[in-house]
Length: 135
Length: 152
Image (cartoon, rainbow over all chains, first blue to last red; front, side, top):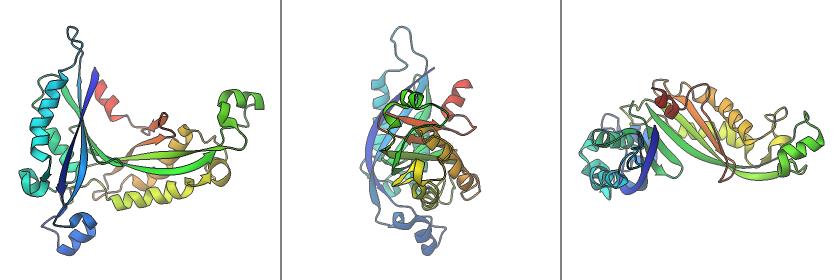
């Protein structure tokens, strides 16, 4: 078993708000991230696929395919978007780093032609990241 | 289960030296790091907590709480000090990157295990970078999630 990772970047804005909390609770729990106008990050997503090396090609999967999949399924949906308003799932799910990582997993897991999705790592800043292994 | 990692920094001096070895052996084993006057590093500490994403907040753990705990337990103790001379933590142990990593894990585990809304958060990993080329990881008695998956 070998692990292949591809990295991509996207920029998006978001804010944290739960309509079930009062305005005060939202401010207390989410702090600056509660600003309804949103704020932005340069996200880095790392997609790790686990698989066996094909003896003929020497590859687990074609990295071009993975790049294309990442562009179609993730970057086209999230890059340069206001996540709360423009990505339907985040109308009802708060677009925290945790939830974005889980959502990226859902977008990609069933669409890999070869190998098995092993990990999504999502950096919100160089000093904060989330890992999701699908369970 | 989601793993969330936050990076922190501290700068400290240390000297690698053990009374268990002769002066010659210390010099051979620790090389430049055995310099009696010590030397320093800019350390990067990565703290990883694991837990369920709280559906109400979308978060695993309150970052303000995590920052406060790491500041109190690790940064305040180890930043801008000589680890051998100014802390109690390395009186008996050599402050190698390995031992600093283990000590950070020990200091943080009791404060982070059981945190979070349902008390389900746990400390999953400490990674300590001593330089851009050296880093140490410790997962406690539990497995590296990557390694665990490989076995299945």
